[in-house]
Image 1 (tube, rainbow, N blue to C red):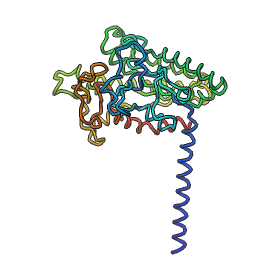
Image 2: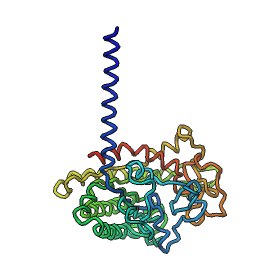
Image 3: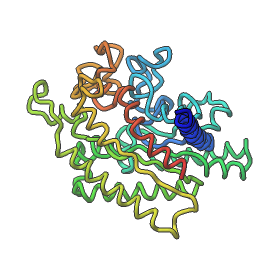
Image 4: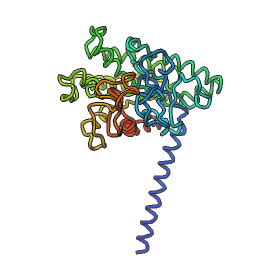
Length: 363
């Protein structure tokens, strides 16, 4: 009896030691991430558009109503973005700041910033529609940032800093929702060939990041676009009573995501062009967001077909403002406005993406 108890006790101690080593390994790997750099659109813009001449802004109430001190920072949601949760998870900082903020300190700069701009996309035409910062311009800002960092750390340390940093890209929805589906200019493309056109720009951007020292890159796919409240509104025969997802738009997203994953796989197989230690991870937001919408009760959501701000059918950016009606509990809503998720939905997307982030960091 005593021997059995002793064996059981030792087994538990051994298991605890293994678990503690595993946790320590994860924590150590997180500390190896020097910084986080973000590129893309409003899903990851913490306020860069505050500093440019564009109507695509959200630095006014009710945006930020659940943020620290209810400050509307320029994030297109009621609180934090998914990238804020990631930066905190990586042990870098609680909030990822916008690069264009003139008050950023050197200490803040070192651990990472977001270069993203609401309304942007991979298609060069997309950012011109809202006078926002294009993806190539975001890359130019990143190069400027690197020069500032080199002045602080020196070239050699900066190179190591880049190699161990975490890069995050989220764009593409505006290319379809604001551009391809809404404007006639790109109608010479089919949805398939337009997706291929976008993917060429995606690949070019990744290769440019590689040249600048990026080695750990996470790239987000498209959401179920047909479930965005604004897309439902613009395609419904009865805006009030017919608010189901429009599958023809979500189908385009599914097909694009499949092509994107295939292209990323092929890119990494081309060993002659891939820098040593480089890895790309695809982050799926389609299925997690679709699950939140289709099985909303399981996640504590009540409202999935309209946003919390205003009617929730069409309001976004300046149409969601201080005069708008706002729901009493955003945590019951998947969407904050007619396009963007609530902080709770962003947190859920982050939690689902965590294994991919861990795998990328530990690669």
